[in-house]
Length: 342
Ligand code: PMP
Image 1 (cartoon, helix red, strand yellow):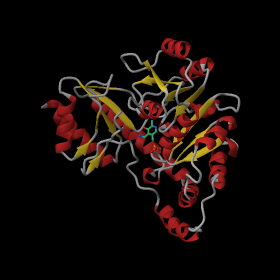
Image 2 (cartoon, protein in one colour):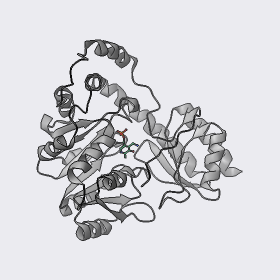
Image 3 (cartoon, helix red, strand yellow):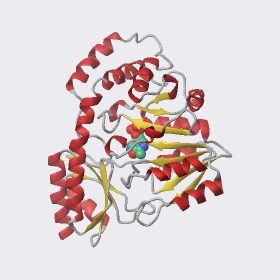
């Protein structure tokens, strides 16, 4: 196997990893210094992260035993796969999608079964039927909105997955705040559905490494068996509780990003490129005449880093750009217009 890499280059405008372009609020930073002093550093943290889970549970109107928190949603996904993947089990994905599902599943020894999206990268319900019927996966992943396509999944696809699921269905909502709907609308203790979220995007805290899952308590119990003792340090628990005090402020920024997203999509749509509609904070596009890697290099020469997806299976010729600040986006668009016209 090889590892999952997200190449970084030191450039002024980084639009390649779907982070928030805005730093967290100053007032949160002020609170952090008090938090550092208040921690009993010689003691292990609260293993159950109870207070933090209470605050997250209240945010979503669920109970504390329906929430599990970890170091980024990647660790949440890993914990799910440690509990429900493993040798002798199948894990289903619908490609192209976030690559870590298949990567982590294989690391646990599970067999990965890949459903295929249509040529336009949308998901066909007959393909869902085929994958679920043929493979009876222990875990099925649906990323909504999907990374790297940005497409919002129709509700019917999730309903159909849940109707046919023999194992659990994980809906990865890393980008939910930018989207049109959330699977949490359907959440119930009786449905085998887990919904993952992250603080890395809307909440501007990718450096903090925090993510969580809302799931029925019988799933959470199994995640707690798979998680390491004290996996979530005291500082992180307290810093995240403090961060949740600023959620509304952070969510106000979502509309700024969505407006910029529409501006970028429209602009690219008028260039010599195909662009996919996005319900996320990034946009997938495919230059028609110019080669993707040539365009990627031309952008880099202008100090702008986007994600080159052109060598990924099913994404030939595609690039993905994260929505940045207004001025970053403007620099990107003028460099792109130049690259596509030359
Ligand atoms: N899920 C998806 C779909 C993502 O794009 C990402 C980040 N690239 C993650 C999960 C992981 O996010 P984090 O570990 O920062 O919470």
